[in-house]
Amino acid sequence: MAECDPACCDGNFGKKVKSVCNSACEEKTTRVLEGCIPLPLPDEIISEIVPKAKDYALLHGAGMRFKDTYNPDILQMAPFFLLPSAFPRREFDRVVKLQPLINILMHRIAHDHEFLESALKNTIRVDDFTAKLWEIYLTVREEGVSQWVSLGMFRCDYFYCVPCQSAQQVEINTIASSFGALAARTGLTHRYVLGELRKPELLHHLPENNALAELCGGMISAWEIYGNKKAVIMFVIEDVTYNICDQRFHEYEIRRQRPDIHVIRRNLTQISKNGKLTNDKRLIIDGDEIAVVYFRAGYEPGQYHSEKEWEARLTIERSKAIKSPSIQYHLAGTKKVQQEVARLGVLQRFLLESEANLVGQLFTGLYSLDLGPEGDEVIKMAMENPDRFVLKPQREGGGNNMYGDEIKEFLEKVKDTPAREAYILMDKIRPPMQHNYLVRGGTEVKLSEVVSELGIFGVLIGNEKEIMINKFAGHMLRTKLSSANEGGVAAGFGALDSVFLFD
Image (tube, rainbow, N blue to C red; front, side, top):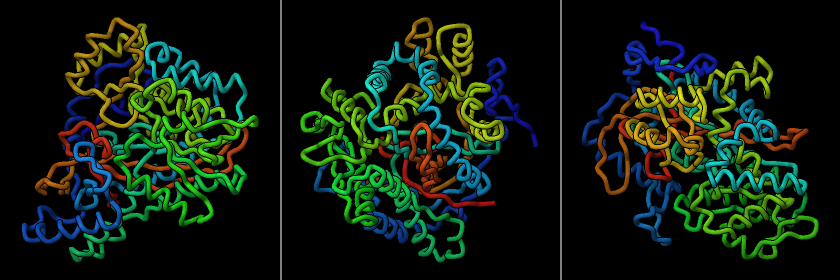
């Protein structure tokens, strides 16, 4: 088999950057994975199974509300793929096993002030959003932290990289890591579909997924650590919630596990109006003391309409409530920090040599655009071959990245300005293609060429000196048409899926 130049995607960032994706790499990129059953399915089977799958998904809570048709009284089916998508068992097991180590890495990064400051010093000069987060972080640090315990509910996203023949990390999410609930329900839908297709012998290829129970268990453990049985858990939400089922099922799962715990939902504007701190820094919202704050919003600038919303975020961070994420966890999850962590030798700052080697194998190429010779060389490389890369700003939520000629056009505008320091460059991972049926309301179901992105959840609770809980917490799979660049389901770019493991 032809070999890919290892510098193409092994994360070896010590060598000088150059365009190395050669013909051997391209040859291996053409791989197409076989699905769980032979495709295409006969038309008569499609016409019978699709309505059943739609009903099962919707009646088991796999629903959303959509921006273009929003109605609070109407729930629509979340888009999903008819069949589970293939993913190599070896690589699935590897990233599952490494998730607790990733949790520890993020925890230690978040508590390393010197590293965060060094990593973000240029970004905060040109990116107003990250600068505001950094300002809150410094304010709390200088005033004295009221709650040292943080709740990390992380999600690491991966593509299986054909040239590398291994899972490669796309990013680590530390705030609003969503779809723990809907991922589990999609797995149930696929079990039902395989049963209806009379393929029960395939069910053992679908791993159990306890993401919802594990994530909610993390919030419950944090509530117990807080130590006030009358205090509540608060979800910080958007002004309008489209991904309502995923959020509500977290609320309902907490109630199922612990009927004595109450959950409230507030947006940042409401918190600014009705939130206050007591003299001993307890957070009070509409008369309720808050034990745990779970951010499902607050990750993008549009959710802060004015200084009042920023004041609300600062009030939360000043409080004794246990936050998911705390402000330092939020900063640790920025794209710039992840790029700096991927530099040669940096992982050893946080992990043992053997641990760093294992985690480092997950990284693809991540490159700084900071002003200077290194950044200039990276920009030259990107402009010469923009299809090899993804340009990323310091944003979450989907729809923010740039690809192909868009990269070249943008860098041409900013290459000589500090504005480029708000972005990082990443090697474009080359996942295998496979075939599946996209099921989306109001559109024809047809066989499509797709690629899949695996998300691995982790939960960690701890402070600077002690880690109390650290575990793998389930998984999710998002799949998109191979022609699409973005894959976020809530942002409208992808669809729900589940994993079909193969050896």
